[in-house]
Image (tube, rainbow, N blue to C red):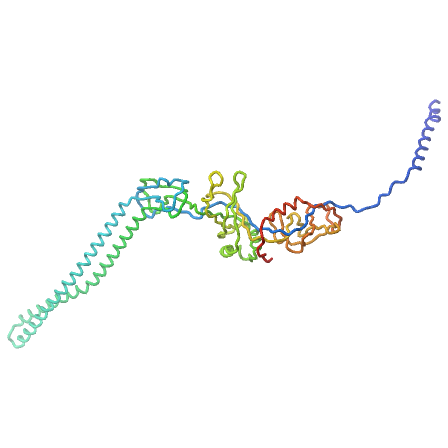
Length: 460
């Protein structure tokens, strides 16, 4: 009973009062404010296209090698009497320095023997000349005797025909005549052989003279001298050691110049050469032709090395192309030369370029002019542009040069064009933009303009 009374007099009135208040509130509430639809803009970063001078370059890495090396190879055998006390690994020797001297005893004996042989042969030649004179005189006498024997034989034959002398006397006269003829013939033959003997002896003298010259040359070869200033890389001889012919006694590296065979991508090298207006279609397959072309393009080269947090640089010249292309990396060796590799050194500040240093090489061509944009602004052959109405436009573009983090544009991009360099979440042609110029990026790009007046522009 009490519960029913509570429901009738307390709960139901409260419910009715709440419903009435809710109806009153809803019926008297003002309608919601109407918000008109509006296009929302997308915030993007932009740069304003400006012309700059950029130096095209291609880079690679390689090891330093001396431009000239010298192997001190002994051309004769002998005992080492003298070894330069400065011939030690790492030492630098001047041009003309005596490296090694072998014992000259054996070679002096060979010279003395060759001279003695020459004197003996010359004496024999003089003997032949005297013998020729003597035999000629003897031949004259024997011919006179032959004439007498001939007259005597004719007289005996007349007497024999007249029956005055016997057959025995005739035979004796004939025998004497034949014997005299044999003497004359023997002397004549001996005289005919003398010119041949003289020629043989003359040639023998020439052989002995050649032996003397060889012995003299071998004596000179006992002393090894350095043809150019060089640094000792290896020593394998000591005083008193027997040195065989053909043995390498020392190896030295020239200090006047150094070379670096930088491994550079063929594609990068082609792009660099293209900026000079040179056709490169056949060059990668013909290194000899590349040598001739590179030497006339006026390319610059710089050798850099990181040392103690600083970058050391040496000017270089492009010398030649190596004979092969790396099949794995597709890189080709471009050999650059650094003159005065040691003279430019400064103790404690700048080391010399020595064998085995790992360095980078940068090749540069003549500077070219164009619009420079970040490489990241290229999107599948297109760039995003903010037009005068802050609307997004997509423009096809073909960069003339892509280098590192930048791209150089030379066609279809006027100065002052606003280029979008950020990446909107949605890219739709004609969408509204809220462009903000990236002054920091512009300053970075402007810093690339470090060249002076441009040279003649290469054709594309």
